[in-house]
Length: 109
Length: 112
Image 1: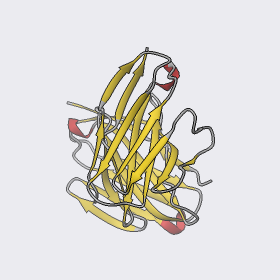
Image 2 (image 1 turned 90 degrees about the vertical axis):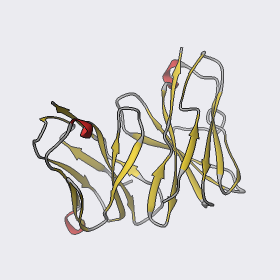
Image 3 (image 1 turned 120 degrees about the vertical axis):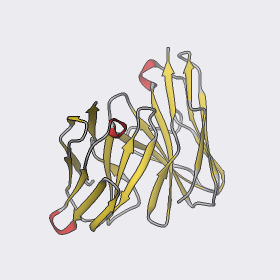
Image 4 (image 1 turned 45 degrees about the vertical axis):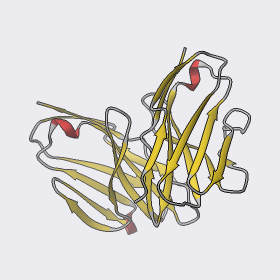
């Protein structure tokens, strides 16, 4: 099946700093989503982005499908950005959403 | 996107017992998915539940341990049977509407 790798696995930032999270996938995809899992375990959808670039406030994402990677940018980070960020994809063969290992982000005040 | 109500939100259970987790969706959906997230790990798909047919289980998961019901297009349950401490995890249900996957708020299970 498709492999999804995220980097870095852990990230500590000072409040106000910017960061870039990366997601590499091993095959063509027809669906890619970024999620934020808050400390209570809830998964919040950030972006549906199988290709192209999207922005939502301080967050933006870019997927280069031909090169099989996606980037999530967080600008002016806040303590509430802390949690785990997951990239998940669906390959062209099926409906199963496959998750990467996640990036655990801690933003310090 | 669909809104999913999942319950219970958390539970502490004795080993050897069973727990049933429920998910209610605010719209009719063809497929519902059940995931497990072990402590500090990513999400792993347990099974896909279609209404009117047996659930399809992923490698490493069996129906006797994780029986699933799907009585209609808006509801599903997952039972974690004969629990052991290794079953302590967050369990999440998910649906896809259009191309967007959404998740329930999760059930945090601790087995003692």
